[in-house]
Structures are given as structure tokens and as C-alpha cells.
Length: 265
Image (cartoon, rainbow, N blue to C red; front, side, top):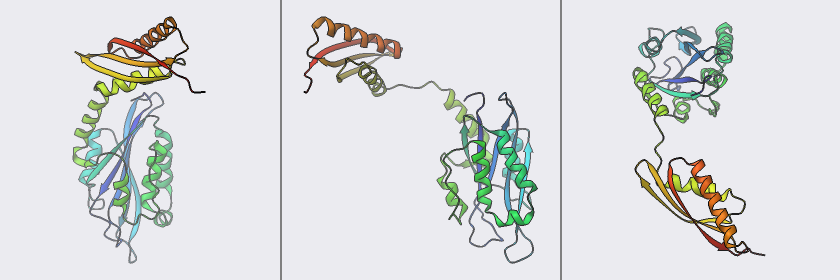
């Protein structure tokens, strides 16, 4: 991940909203707050909760907390209190250009909003707005989702138990730093594209790729204009071979065969 990258989190409480009949599940949020140099400072987390109160359907309250460490974040979101039951699961979003300050401004706006304003807006929209301002892309609109768990299920990524968030993050970091494992099919696709990028190559034909230890051996047929001389065809083949060697260092040997191609008038 880049220097300005960060992670955002969507939490789900499957138990639902007791004072609001027909509402299944509640969504919470969290994000990593980084400074302008990309240095991690803390987590912010919160939710808009349904709380017992006056009237048939109770009332909604917005809350947030600042957590200095990951264990503290997990404790706040997975342990719960009398007023705020624990969240059950979480999804993680990697954000390349995290906008910590923009997301925090939205949190401050919601925390300062009058209770009647919070009660008139969809709590699901609060979570979506905070995550979107942080930089999470392509989140489904909340309109029409009386069951928040349906919106949560549409979010990309794997849902894991909130208490196992630390293990999940470790696995994500390990997969990000693991070297890419290339297959012969990957190599074939790449060398074909390199060959076809040459303006004098009319097409790439049969391709053979074999693994040789940690590297690959490639044999590729390319088609060139039949009007070219044998010498010109050899020059094109050498140029393609050099382009493959330069662009794909994991290829140890390249064999290019030139075939004539009749241009259609």
C-alpha cells in the first residue's frame, strides 16, 4: 500500500434493531486516521444506534470513539455495552488515497447535529457517507434497504468475526507482501501483448511456454508482412525478443519464429 493509504471498516450487528420493527441488522463503521505524511495516529469508530426512548419507535443517537490501538478498536466494537450491543462481523476496505481529515469532518458534523436531525436520516446513510468520504469506492446507495444486512452483504470483501479482525488484517498484509506467482498462462499472455505492441508485427501465433526452475522458456511465432525481406524479418524478431527480455525478466530464453502474413487489400 502507498504512503497515503489506509483502511476503512464496515461492522455488522446481526441481532437487529429492537425498537424499530422490521429493521434487520445495524451497520457500524471505523477508519484509520493518518496524518499528511501517512503516519498512523489512531482509529475512529462509531455508529448511529437505535435507543429506547419516547414514542412507539424509540430514537436514534450518533456516537463515535477514538481508539489508539487495534485491540482497543476490537474491544469497543466487539464487546459492546448495555446501550451499544456488540457488532458481530466486519469487512475491511483498503484505500490507496485515504482522506482521513475529510471523513473526520463528517463525523464531527454528525456528532454536532441535533437529535431530531439524526432521527430523520437513515443511519445506514451515515455509515456510507463516512466510508465514502474516507475514500471507499463503489458503495451501493442505501435507498430501499430497510434491512441493513442486505446492504452489508453487497459490500465487497470477506466478512469475518469482529473479534478476529487482528488475524484477518495479518492475513491481508501477508498477501499484499507475498511475491506474485506467475503461471505459464500468465507469461504467454504477457509475451503476446509485447509482440503485438510492435508496429511491424501483424499478429502473434502459436506460443510455447515452459518453466525452467524459477524462470520460463518461451517459443513464439509472429506474423509479419510477406513483403518484408528475410533480413527485415530477422530484425523484427530480434527486436521482439529484446522487448520480451526487457519487459519480462523472469523469461530466461526466448525463441522467435517469423512467418509471412499476406495483407488484405
